[in-house]
Length: 136
Image (cartoon, rainbow, N blue to C red; front, side, top):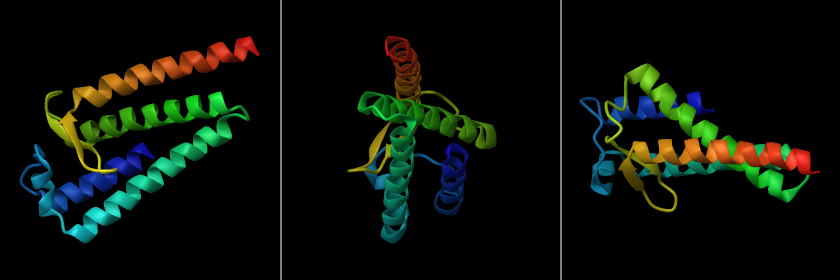
């Protein structure tokens, strides 16, 4: 799914930001027609539902379902940035601004933040999953 997400973002950037992709404020998103931003919002909702389904199927226990969701979300996000870099050599710097999510409003910030956050969450959630396996 990270590859699919990266591909969609690559297509959108090519269509609406052909010279270079700079998003430093919500106003920079105004280049896209509102109907496309609405579709993007629903695509993000669908992605969250798919990741929640991974968590739901991960275990019969609620704690492990939540940990499975967090781990899947983290791995997905890290590989999303990996594929953007692989295909576009983007971001050029960890200080480059990006749109993290559109739900419930656009979240914009430097790329280093989700990389650190989701690397940490991936390790911690995996550790808690393994730890809980031996506690059962």
